[in-house]
Picture 1: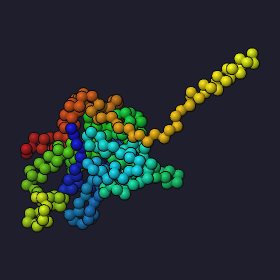
Picture 2 (picture 1 turned 90 degrees about the vertical axis):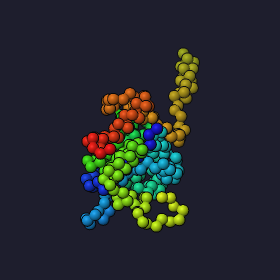
Picture 3 (picture 1 turned 180 degrees about the vertical axis):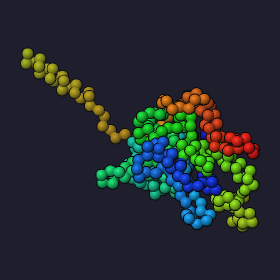
Picture 4 (picture 1 turned 30 degrees about the vertical axis):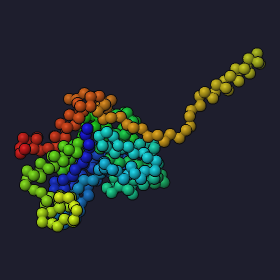
Amino acid sequence: MARMKFICDAERCIECNGCTTACKAEHDVPWGVNRRRVVTLDDGIPGEKSISVACMHCSDAPCMAVCPVDCFYRTDDGVVLHDKDVCIGCGYCSYACPFGAPQFPSNGTFGLRGKMDKCTFCAGGPEENGSEAEYEKYGRNRLAEGKLPACAEMCSTKALLGGDGDVVADIFRTRVMTRNKGSEVWGWGTAYGKPGENKPEGSKS
Amino acid sequence: MTRWVLALGGAALCLAGCGDKAQVLDHSKKAGEASWKGAKNAYVEPGWKAGDQKSWEQQVHNRAQAQNEYTRTGGAK
């Protein structure tokens, strides 16, 4: 059983916004809604780092936990999706999400917030796979077409990887190890610690 | 004649209730369809069989490997 995940390699991301554009075009995402965006830290300073951010399809998703109408569900492939027919557009998920993934269209006459919209891992929604109704509400269902998310497949430097967690983690690990890198890779040390660094008592290696 | 018209009118009124649609607020979310069942459109990638879970998993696995430059170039590993 696949467990779909994204990984973004900050050493490779060149802030081209190809992922954002691919997502917008593939799903006809409305103006003002960004299912994916590129965040740059220390922009303009030598050593700046960019990272592509969208819904991370958390295993224990906080949006699911806080939704008052329980509109979220997780597919067998680990993709967190929601039912727009149930969503009331309250915005709780937006506060709960650490990645700012939930988006709210504001193109109504009075700036109405509308139903929540977010990255679907190109897996559509609860409607019939590949149907017009599904496309209108959630965009294209590439997974049901035997493809992977457009953002990852379009990434020119292959900084953004998407697919089964085991596979994409293996691709990233191989890349780092083949180039004799490790703890100096941005984010690696934060996650796994740096050589010679004192680890807090009781922490795992 | 008048009795027939009244009877028909009464029957039509009684049957009118049958066309009433349920107005219950439905909060039951839909579960969604599994991806391996395939999409019913013209954009399905060839090389796998819709409805066959193993075939879909293999397809997605192969597709993911297209993101691996070492596999594509036949380089290290």
